[in-house]
Image 1 (spheres, rainbow, N blue to C red):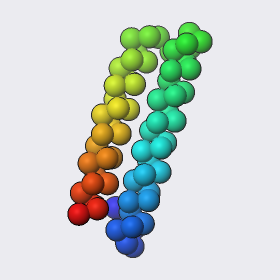
Image 2 (cartoon, helix red, strand yellow):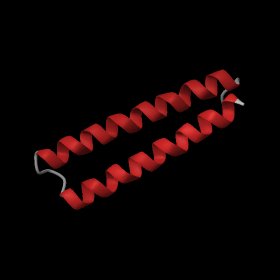
Image 3 (cartoon, helix red, strand yellow):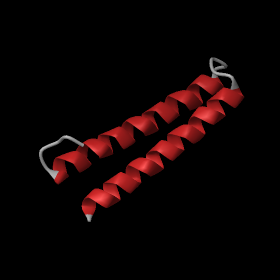
Length: 64
C-alpha cells in the first residue's frame, strides 16, 4: 500500500493474488502426494480462497 501510484499498488495486489493461487496449487499437489494431510490442506485451500477474495476487494476499492 506504500507504492507511489494507485496503478502501481494495483499491480502489486494482482501479483499477490497470483502468488496466492500458486500457493493453492502447491497445496493441492501436497495433498495429492500425501505430504499434506487432507483436512489441513483443505483448510489452507479455504484460507487462500478467502485471502484471494480480500485482495480482489482491495483491487476493486483502489480502482474507484
